[in-house]
Image (cartoon, rainbow, N blue to C red):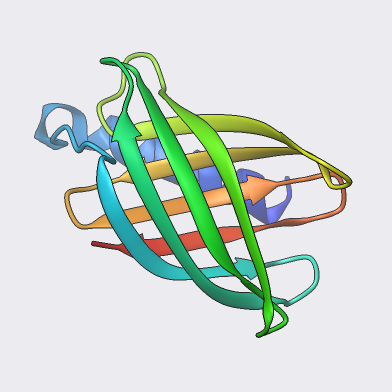
Amino acid sequence: MNRRQSFCCMLVALLLCLGPVASAASPTGRWSGTWRSESTGHQGPLRAKIRQVDSQTYRAWFAGRFAKVVPFAYPATLTRVPGTSSMYQSQTRLPLLGTYRMNAVVTPHSFNASFTGRRDAGIFQMSR
């Protein structure tokens, strides 16, 4: 099992152990923090603006910088994982980069996610 899979399993186990103690947290709003590629070591600032579409779906706009000066931005649709109150998933096809998948855990003050792509994997860590 690789590190990303281990991380996701630990998050799921933690949330299952918390049971009813875990409170519903909406990802709606503005977030800021960092992203880091576990594959390449690249990292940089990251911002997100997220709005609710319906009770299970959110539309996110992520923007950041790669190599300190190259800006990037992309949209993603976050869907609540069934049976959870704070886990979300996304799958987005990015031109030239392939499909990126994200698993996120949202609390009232933090947005922590792992992502995987064709030749990349890493994390997002943001707060309000």
